[in-house]
Every structure is written in C-alpha cells, then in structure tokens.
Length: 596
Image 1 (cartoon, rainbow, N blue to C red):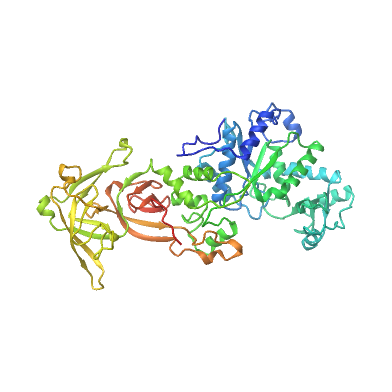
Image 2 (cartoon, rainbow, N blue to C red; image 1 turned 180 degrees about the vertical axis):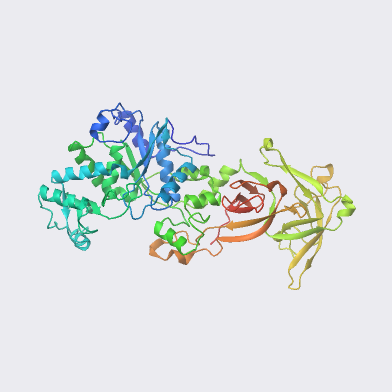
C-alpha cells in the first residue's frame, strides 16, 4: 500500500523526527485502529456504516489551486506522501478550493502534474484518493446551520473595518459584536438569505461564537462563511457563499478520516480553532471520533529564493523572468525545466530534516543532491562553451591525408555497460578560450607558447603561438602534435605534461545554444526585513551562448541530462530543444563556485 516511490536516492536516510515519533506512538497505542472508512469521504453516519479503515494512517497534501507549486511545497509533498508510504498508509491529494476568485483549472492541472513528476501517487490499491474541498460544500453548509442552531455561530453585519477594530489586539480583549446575541432563528434566517443571494459581497459574514476575550486572537469569533458572487471552477454558480479556509480545512480532514494533519508552522495559532471546531461537530453528532489532529513543522526556507506567490507573480508579470517555468524560478515547473531531478529534490528535502525549529537551507544543498543523483547516471561528453579555434599545424606530417582520426571514450567512467562514445580528432578543433594564455599566470598549465598539454582522449600538442585581430583579441591558437602520443598507445606516457584540456573537432562538432543559468538573486534572503527583493536581482542569472558539442550528443531527445566534462551538468531544454536545433540548460557546475 505505497503512495510514494522506493527511495533510491543516493545517501538518503530516514532520520527519526518528532512526526515519526508521533505516528509510531499512535500506531503503538492503536489511536486510530477502530476507525471506519466507507470507501469515500463522509460524515459520522457514513463512516459508521463502513468497515474498519485498512490504512494505518492517512495524511494529506492540500494546496489551494491559485498558483504554481514551489520548492517549499516539495517539502510538504515529500513529507506527507513519504510518511504515509513509510507507515502503510495513504496520502490524500486534496484541493482546498474555497476561494473561487483566485482559483483556476490551469493550476489544478499543474499541481497534479508536479506531484506526479516528483514521484508520488494518490492512487493506492486501485483507489484514487483525489478530493476537492468544494465536494464537501453541502456538508459544510449543514454544519454551519448546526452551529447556528446550537448557539455557536451568528451572522455579523458589521463592516470589515468595524470587525477589525473590535477584534482587539494582544494587549486588549475584543468587543462583542452588536449582532452577537441574535437568536438562533434570526441567525438561521439571515444565513439562508446569504445563501440565497439576497445580499451583496461584504454585507455580512457568519462567525463562530467562541470567546472575544481569548488570548488567542484566532478564537475571537472567527469568520467561517462570507458572501462571494463568483463562479467556481468546480461548482459553477451554485453557491454565492463560500467557507473560510480555517473552517473548511478541519472539516475536510475529518470527512476524509485523515489521522495526522501535517502543516507548516504558520498554522500553529490556528490549531485551537481546528480542535474547537472538530470537537464541537463531534459533540453535535455530525462527525465521528477519533478525529484528526494537526501537527506543525518548520517550512523549508532556501537561500537565494523567494516563495511568495505575489512576488513570484510580479517576476512573471513584469517579464523579469520568462514565465512560471523559467529555469531560474523556484517553482516545480521551473526546477524541472532547469534540469533538477525529482530524486535530487526529494533527497534535499530529506536531508533538510523535519523539526519545529525554523532555519535556512543553503541553495547549494540542492546542487549537492543533484550531483549525488546524477554522478552515477549521467553520460559524459565534451563541450566547448566559449569557443576558440585551435589549428594543429603539423597534421599532415603526423596523419598524412586523413581528414580525421577516430577517438573514443567511455560513455560513463564507472558504467562500462553504457558503452563508448566516438568522435574525431581533426586538424582544426574548438577549445575553451580560457585554456589559452599568451602570458600565463603562475600555476597555469594549459596552452601557452612553448607549453605542452594533452588533448583529452587524443594526443599531446605543443603550443607554438596565436593570431589576433585588429583589436588585439586572440582569434586562433596554433600547436604542433607531438608524434606517437595517442591516448591508449604505448607512447602516451612517454611525454609528461601537467595539463589536459577538452576539445571538440570542428569537422564533426554539433552547434548548440547553451543557456547558462545561475541564481536569480545575489542576496541569500532577498526580501528579508521587508526590503525590495528586486533590488538584489542577479544580472548574470542567465547568459545565452553558442557552443560546440561532441557528435555523441547529436539527435538527443528533450529532457536528457548529461555531464559536460569540466563544466557541469546540463539538460536538453524540455520546451525549446529539438534534434535539429539543440538547446541545453546548465543545471549546476561540478562544484559550488558561487560568490556574491
């Protein structure tokens, strides 16, 4: 009964944390062993008619479909689906779609795709546990009427400004609404008028009647229903009143028989209302015990990243980035297009740990996880990112009339089963511009006049000079082949050199567009202290260059990852790449070289 993939991530560990300890305690005590589940969400009577729930625990991932998921959501996805699978349970995929003005089917589709891509599934033992809060609107309305009938909810006609002022603050108790003592009959009639569309948006709200003097401001008669004459992506125009998230969420958990409702720390202050509402509805006979319990963990904060939906939307709307899937974005679609693997993201989340304490995870940890994942998977290839022509001046003396000489190298140095890649050494090559220095700095062992280097997998050459243009820029480097130094031959080790450089033969090179991505911001916490996050945008976060690749990379499909020797990990862009016009994105280098 697994809703998560087997964790084959390198160096992955499942360290104990407070959530695992809670789940193990509940399983040992049989806290939810007598739960009944009739095969679908439902109220107390519905569940009582069903058999014992076969799932040992039930968790849920409940995003609101009002935007694209980001790296912070990946932590919640990994945690909820992962814990459910680890303990023989089920994780529900649920949309908290209670705010019709901001929600769209586009976001629903993108969220489902992101969860699947990360390697998780809400279908367990042939049953798809995909749910929508809007499917429970009838019950939520019935529960609201029950609260009104019990004297525990009332319709308030104060303005939003009046309610805010009368709510008080941490030092001052709230003031009772003048509508708080209406009779149940009056409140019920008014609430039904709200439901029937007889009042405009904002005219009134339904509030829970708890305690206006509570030290927890969230218990000072929170609003649980508001008027919104808006079309809903799932229910259409059937409703013009919609439940508040804080009211809907605990009910959704209870109807779905969730055992452990795991959320981030910003909901900790809402837990008393969560408990009050579920205990009250159980007392009223609408819901059944044992009810769900909420537990909070510290959200994933990653340096050099912002996760505010409003700020991410500003980046898109102002065309600072090229859409929600821009490879510099922290969205799941952006990370995916950049080339990060689901295994790497899951591994980073696991390594970040789960606790109540906040903190920051270094962005470099994502790159480390990516390297750990791809080191044993990604094929190798040579590529030249900043091309400079190298001419081998004595080619005909060494190789005669041959247009090229065949060379070969393993597709992966530790995986012989992947075979070899083949490419040609020719009289004209492309090398990296920084592999040549007319006047070498100290410790420079690559090409400079009079120095010998090995062309990797090829021959040893001795640099003899260079050509320049009128501006004094080097346009071509000249070198002579040292005879009898072919790699793999007995003479290969007779000449000792300190430097080895990569190259691509001009005759069989594959031209490609290379998109060199880096961090979007220069500050570790771009929006800390309320500062303008756009002030720390990194002007070098994207560079597009034309490079050359060895012929083994010709004809690659989109979304294929490869290690460019010396340069790092790249991926064929999943949108723009074609075999005829290759486009590669740099995912990360072979080591962290970031500097502010």
